[in-house]
Length: 360
Image 1 (cartoon, rainbow, N blue to C red):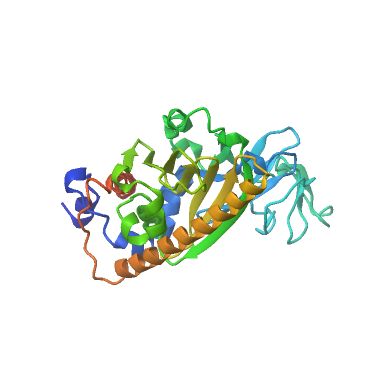
Image 2: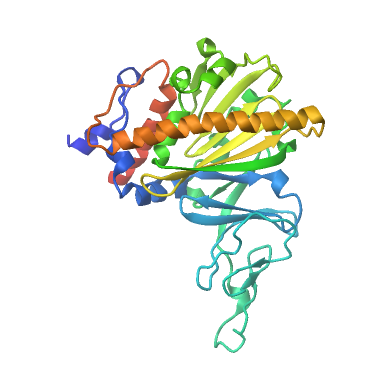
């Protein structure tokens, strides 16, 4: 058995080790991960509250592929490549409301809300050029719990019902996440491989050591992590008692490969980890809340944003430190903690399966 076969073989949780450093540090991993993982997965782009009316649109980045979600005149939500078919200019550079059409800012080629080219300035005399023959490439779309997911290649992606199986029952019927309103997006550029950030998210093992404020909020002794086929979730009762989130529990869902849902009473925070190179990623948080325009509601939202920023800065610092360690040449895969790192093991087993299939 060669080295690659050995390091990619399935490992039992009881004796599992982490992935070798090269899967986080080798330059070729960026293209490999996009081709084998991201293009064959469901990725989150936004929430229906951002796409309420025809022409409302949200832009995103699917591991290097610019995308745009648009509410059409017929009410349907579509997701397109955000790349003009002329010379690759952007159709949109930011989210927007009530656009009548989609106009490339480079040369003004304009598309209808269903992705068909409508006009191309000064191209009327070009031989054999038919405007209506040109369309923006379209992704497959599913709307679930108010969130809009899209897949570049649905044929290679998990069947969507299997992808989310069991989450509705665990969240419960009283959360009504589809009714929440968008409040704010916060982004962080992080000097680490996207998998380092996901690894860190998937375990509460580091909470007592890295997050003193969060550790006071959660009951670490009761912290539970469970895995399903395409996701894992962490659960803890809240111990805040300070009115920030009220009574209830904290649910932290990770969905293959790069989506996180942080669900607390009255609040949904979504988190997308976007690869930007082998040792860089961008982490984008969107905050959604149950509609509450009272003074107390506004104060809670501001306090939540401040607390989230505190936690994220703690995470980003350790993730960058870990990337330096992985890139140093020193690291050999260490044993995982079976009690606290079962979701890391689950993620690594999914990665190993993808990399084995590609190598075979």
